[in-house]
Amino acid sequence: MTDTSPAPEPAFFPNKLGRIALLAFEEIVGHNGLNAVLNRAGLGHWINNYPPGNYDTAFPFADLGQIQCALEELYGPRGGRGLALRAGRACFKHGLREFGPMVGISDLTYRLLPLNMKLKVGADVFSKTIDRLTGQVVRLDETPESLAWVLSRCPICWARQAEAPCCHLAVGLLQESLYWVSGGKNFLVEEVACIAQGDAACTIKVDRQPVD
Ligand SMILES: [Zn+2]
Image (tube, rainbow, N blue to C red; front, side):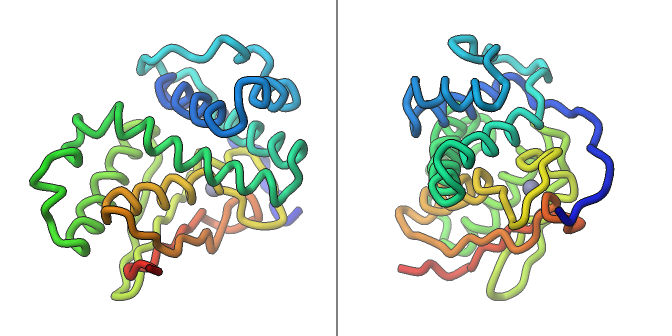
């Protein structure tokens, strides 16, 4: 435990994002698996009762943290981390279907941009969409080699305390978005600082060069 600050005030996602997250977890661990996770997390009220696909802000950030915590308890830290990464990737696919047309990254014009422009434009669009949907301010730090997402209020690890960076869902989401943006390349995505372990902000670093 490195974080001794008081628990943050409750904050909420639009229902639609909570729904996407639950559908993504279900896709990865199965219906029964997710029921077990939700029970373990003390979130049995979501079983067979996912939030509706609307924009009412009623899905607590903290529920996402509880779910990831329960995943680690049930599947072990390594197993839970792997599943959360995969759920993050699934979140992107569901999210793209919902929001892609709205933000314009499904357009052919976007698809035809050169890769480094796509990374830049995609990162901008993505952070603005997150800002709009969650009220979280995402800052983008750029170096010639990398882009870093800096979240000073992170919805993924809200109210969590951890020994190591734990926003695997966000890492998976970024991995999949980069895979999609680049037409099938993999990038090194790493969370280098995390509020849950006492850092001032969650920072997820992305190498500009794909690994393959
Ligand atoms: Zn975080």
